Every structure is written in C-alpha cells, then in structure tokens.
Image (cartoon, rainbow, N blue to C red; front, top):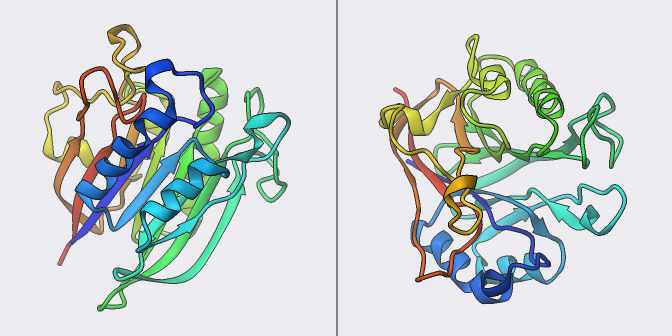
Length: 260
C-alpha cells in the first residue's frame, strides 16, 4: 500500500497571530508524522527556516523542491514533494512552470498573480520496482481564468505521459469541485478523486478553513490518482489544539493499493 498526504502548511512569515508558524509548526509536523505518508506534497513551504524545520523533522524523507521565483518575497516559496527513502528509489525528477513557457523559471499563466510550479518525480516502488510518477503543485488563487489555465497546462503535461503511466497528483488547486479546473483534471478519462472514491459527494470535503472561519471554508486540496490504483481509504485530518491549528488548511490523506 501507498500512503499519500497533501498539506498546505501556510508560509512561515505570515502574520497569523496565535497561529503563527512558530506556534503551530510542531503541531503541523506531528500531523505528518502521525499519518506517516510514503508520499507527501506540501504547499507554501518557504526555502528558509520553515523548510529547514521540515527537513530536520523528517529525516527519512527525500525532499524535492524548487523556488517558484518571480518578484518579491514570495519567490522562495515552493510546492515540494517528499518521499520515504525506504519506500522508493528515485529514477528521475523535474520541475516546470504553469505557463506558455514552462521551462522558463518564474513564468506565469495569463492573468496569474504569481508564478506556479509543478514538481514531479518518477519513482520505483520498493521492493517490487513498479514505477509511478508523483506530481505536486499549487495553483494560483485568482482570477478563475488563471486557475483554469493552470489546470489546462497540467492536464496537457499529464496526457503526454500516456494512459499506461501510473500517476498520483497532490496539490492546493484553489478551486472547488464544481470548478472548470476540477473538470479539466478529472473529466474525459482523467484522474480519479481519491476522497470521492470512499465518501459520498454530500459529505464535508472542506480542507481550507482560514484558521476556523466558516465563511471561508472550501474543498480546494485534492489527491488525484490514475486508474492503476485502488483507493482503500481517504480522510481529512481536522486535528487542532483549542484555537491552535496546524495550518489554515487541513491535510488530506489517502491510502492506495495497486490494482491487480
């Protein structure tokens, strides 16, 4: 089985008062350790003391991240992926930008507020050697047209891999499940929403909560998989300590098995 987690950990310099990174970082790390993912996709992880804390706290994981670049202090933000060294062997890895010029660092799709990256890794599962590609991303937050563009660029890249390629995709997609972006990734023979494989559509799928603000809640973090996988379980971890949250997003998890 393969345990997967996607978790937007909220950038460490944000002025979040009692939920500042320095107060919640141990809780965030504890949620990761408690689930023990084989594959972990993070979003809003800055390549400074925040990333150092994650690396030091997860010594059994290989950390692959790229600065999204662009102007200003957000250039150090990453959407890194991590994998457990005992579970996988790295065959290849790369990064591209969600734009018309994906190979140009810092490039962005039309109308996007910030550059957005996709980090990927081709991995051999141990001990079987079965290959999969794991992808982690963080779409822009405005406007909807830019989010849709992000989804189109990602879907085009995934389609080029061919239907024979086992895929696992995690991310903060900044769109709900009625959106064009969701349909672009899951429709027409696309990927499967792991959470909806084991839960009815009417069930609460909220992942973003803005530190407990009901009016902000939305199901924007997803784990998507190709048809090569059977979803054994999928959950949203809503653990908190009083008014202290691990992030302004809840981590989402899935337990996968290979189809025979």
